[in-house]
Each structure stands twice: as structure tokens, then as C-alpha cells.
Length: 81
Length: 437
Image (cartoon, rainbow over all chains, first blue to last red):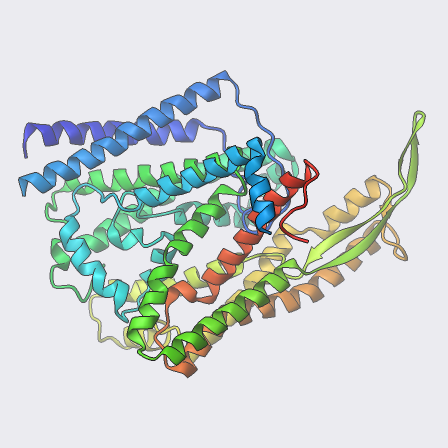
């Protein structure tokens, strides 16, 4: 358990939490199950506003950091074993 | 057909959408191979291999299929979109129980948005629950019962590590949900179903290989592929078929303009509920088996009974229960999604009527009559398609391969059809000839 692992793990906790939060802050565009498998033709016309666009950027950034941290953790584990 | 493909890619707008969807699907697949921190990747691979190629069948195989094989790999996307599906089903079912949900649904677009938001919260909740279950099962080594290094899948079993894994998996599920929504918003088709499609389609090559290697006999392989092709044809045929109830709209004068006066139809698909009954029935049937797995003493009477009758997809009890559940859920889900009273009400409001039938209550009764008869055929068809592979494999004495089960073929075909239809309608907006004629 090096210092690097601990730092990465803390970072992982923070990014995971942030990721869940930012994703939940989005407006759901899923539409649920009804149009999931052969449902109606509901054309979703939604132009995202400035806030939504910024939120998208934050989410993408968090997701990238999240994945990088996970990969790094895996590498550290592989090297130390 | 190919010409339509080329045209689809020549349209800049559509090309962007298609490429966007493909990119998201690629990200989804790539994420399925990133192991969750705390998992020993080497040991997992060692344990997954016999399951992938051998004949071991267990409860988790269907769930594993829906997540594209990433569940058993314990990857960051291990849960796949199962939590989202379960959450949507629960929210849909709660509409019957909780009046507020029904009111929200009737409210139209804004109400549906609130319901979607509830679904999303519920998804995260379920994700935490399922991640905990999987980590617990993996920790005790029950995920791979036949594996020698099963208990070493998670080498460091301290509480913080386990919590970290649960958190990572939950965040992964959230990310998948968002990826799906991105496809719905900016890509082609419905994101969630496309992601399921990706997951299932990804397991096809492995399935073919499994059949080819484990049954030694080229005749059986060909026969098997022929059956699959036949099932696909049948599914496409039935999914496209619908009954059209004619509706006549009365002419109305609003100001100086005339509205209506047209005659249209209400399309009623034979199989209105899609694959949801199949998904629901199989996940419900997996419950007792799951309970049996957690039992301390594996030789108790009821555990044995479940192992013989409910764990084997070829068992008579299993098939019977499966069929009955599918038929039940087909009716149930149709009654939830299509409300004859509501349709009749709407038609009356806009001056529409079915020729020969009075507006209002008689119309609703007529619609109910038609629906219940059509659903009878649809439900039988669903049960039939879902069970053909199991029965056929039983007679052919071939190990059943989940990737070609009825549920997966149904899902792949109906999602594929739906997506092609959407691309088609986008093409037609620009007056091009589409894929489907």
C-alpha cells in the first residue's frame, strides 16, 4: 500500500461521487421503458441550454478522470504484485 | 439496401448521428474490459474461461448476457444497464399502485420527465444494492463455484476496498445510464435498448464458437444456425404485423380553416409489450435459484428441488412456469401501456370515431375487446419464441447457449428493427428511399 495507491483511491472515491451527482443532475432523456423496445415514435427535440452544456463538459471531464484513475490503480496493483 | 446505407452516410446530419452512436457503443464495450480496482484480473480470467467455453449454466448467465459478459469479469460496467431496466419496470408497475405516479403520467411531457427522474434515482439505488450483492458473492467465492482460485478473486478483503468496489460499480452504472441518454438525445434510436443490443450482440461470436467446439458435429451446427435464422424471420414478421382499426375524423371549422375530415387508423401491434414480458419472466424465475445459492445447506429438500426443476432451462417445470409468466406479463404490460378509456376519450375530444361504433364508452369497450384478443395471439407468440430454443436444444441434445436463447434473439431483432425504422424516417425527411420497403 504505497502513498500513490492511497491518493488514487481517495481520488476514485471523490470522482465516483462527483460522477453520480453530475449524472443525476442531468435532465433525463431516457423516456423510460415505454419507447424502449418498439414503442412510439417520440421525437425528442431538446436543445440543451448553456447550463446543460457546461454540465455536459463537467460530466465528461469527471468521467475521463474516473477512468484514468481506475486504469492507474489497476497498473499500480499489477506492478506491486 | 446498400445504396440506402451509402445515402445515410452521405447525409451530413445523419452521418454525425450514426458515428456518434457507434462511438458511444465502442466506449461502452471498452469499459466492459476495465477491471474494478481490488479485483485480481488474472484470477478472474482463469475463472471466467471455463464458464465461457464449457457447459456450466447458472442463474447468472442471463444477467451476464445482458451486461455483455462484463458481470463475470467484474469490470467497472459489471452491472450493465440491468439496474436501469429494473428501475423502469418498477416505476411503470408502481403507476398501478401509487396514484401520484398515475397522475404524473397523465400530465404529459412534464410529468413524464419527473417520472424519468424518479427512475434515475431508483437506478442508482438499485445499482448500490446489486453492486453490494455481487461484491459479496464474489468475495465468498460463490460467483465461480467450480473455480479453484475463486476466493482469491478479491485478494484484499478489507471493508474500505469492498466499499470502493461498490462505489466504482455504482458510478459505472450511472455512466452507462448517461451514455444511453446521450445516444437517445444526439444519436440514432433509443440509447438504452441500443446498449443492450450491443451487449448481447457482443456475445454472439463466443456463442457460435461454443456450439461449434462443444457439440462436435457440423450437421448440428448447421441445423442450429438454420433454426436461429427461422426464428429471426418469424420474429421480424410478427413484430411488423399490426391490426389497423380505422378511425374517421369529422370535419371541423376553426375560424376560416377546416381541420380533420381525414380517415386514419390506430395501429395495434400483435405484440404490443415487446420483449419486456420475457425479460421480466426470466428475472423473476431467477429469484428462487438465487435464494437457493445463498442457502447454507445445499442438500436440503427445497434446494434440491429448485436445482432440479428451476435451474435447468430444459426442465418441464421451468418451461411451464416460464410460459405462464410470459403470458401473464404480456397481458399485464399491455394493460398498463395501452389504456382504451384514454384513447377513446382522446378520440372523442378531437371528433374522431370508429365507423359503426359510437364514441365514448362503446368505443373503449370495442378497443378493449380487440386488444384482449390480439394480445392472446401476441402472448402465445412471445412464449413460443422464448421457448423454441430451449425445446429445440433439448431434442437435439445440445448444450443450451444463452446467446441464442429466445429472449436475446427477440431483443436483438426488435431493437435492430426499431433503429432501422428511425434511420429510415430520418432519410425520408430528405426524400430518400429508405431501407425498408
